[in-house]
Image 1 (cartoon, rainbow, N blue to C red):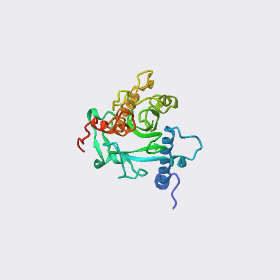
Image 2: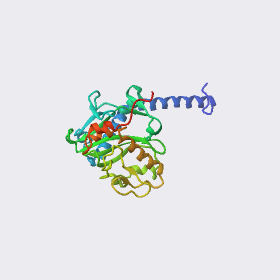
Image 3: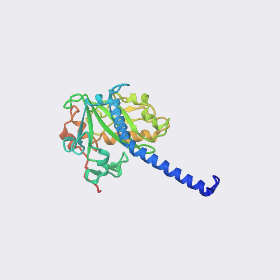
Image 4: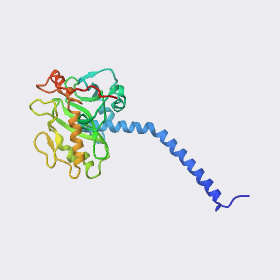
Length: 271
């Protein structure tokens, strides 16, 4: 005898069957769309690199434009290029998680809040790779609510900023999320990273309030901790701990040997 539609047993059976069907559909869609999601993430990454270099225009062929940029893998410990890895596929985030290809950061050396730092990272060169017009470096560090990831483009002199962008963050909309406001980002163009004394430690920072001079940009109203996070990550990644030695090769009056002599001790502190 058929059960009534109001039967509790029949209702539970139908609900359970519906849940199973929906789970299968959602799981299948997630697996089937994963390659497309990966392609979109890669396209977004390339778009951000083009955007920070002022090479992006609405409607352009991103793949064709990005093909004009040369990726190279840099050994952060020496500032030298390495051919040990394929720059098109090297994943420095994965390298940072592997104790064999990264080092532990702690205390005053971990001002960006990373815990671990990879030994190698990919940079992107615009123009002649031996004498680039721009050098694009990845940056990341803790904001108020989590890790912020982005890129900074630097002119071929290794010192003058072209732009900065963030492609991933969890900062508060209208406050810390203003790091992606084009008006705020426009302040970075033309700013200088290092002072005229030839220091290897970056002088660039986000000011508390209005920025002035060659080494400051305006603070983020109501988002002091996010602004401090931006300053800290730049102080880290543009110092000898990060790309400092690499960028020194492009700067007038700074030799790679001087940069290496002034480098901090980066011996591993433990896995």
